[in-house]
Image 1 (tube, rainbow, N blue to C red):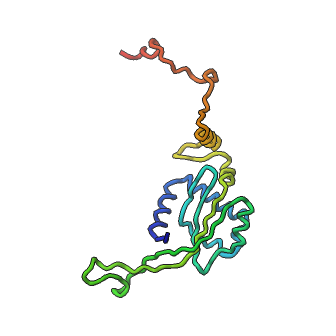
Image 2: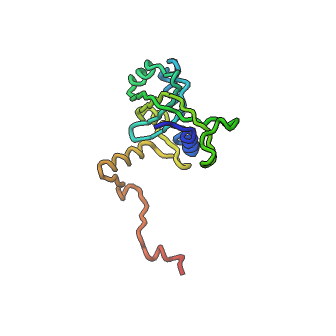
Image 3: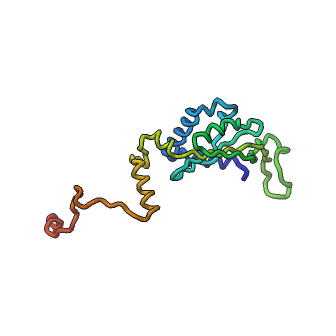
Length: 191
């Protein structure tokens, strides 16, 4: 599917509103740097066009490169060595040209208002599926979600209980507070 400027802008808006996704994306970039991926030709020039798609086990992103600046496939082999899955594909990026005079528009005189011409730019798309354990390890087990800190082990336990259909419950005698309905205690302050 061709990429458009509006798709990239929507992605930027979506990521900037979620600090966790942005933080995880920064950790993803640190991991790419740690495995020396940027030492290979053209890997540093990529632009994020899809993702991050955060799954239980995978962290998926898609990067766009100009056709003439294909990233070195040897760098992809470096990622594969660490358990990542890397996919290369060709596509086009549709860019709206700037209108400086009427010759740069398309449409008839009788039709709707004229629109700016589009430029089709051939690109490479590189999709990287990284095992999420690398990114979770960088967080030391704590994520921030809607101004609350959440332990990654709690999230994993919730996933596991959902997959097996079994809920883990705490023992009632494990220091939990009794919230039973005792009429005398609950009605003391009521009239």
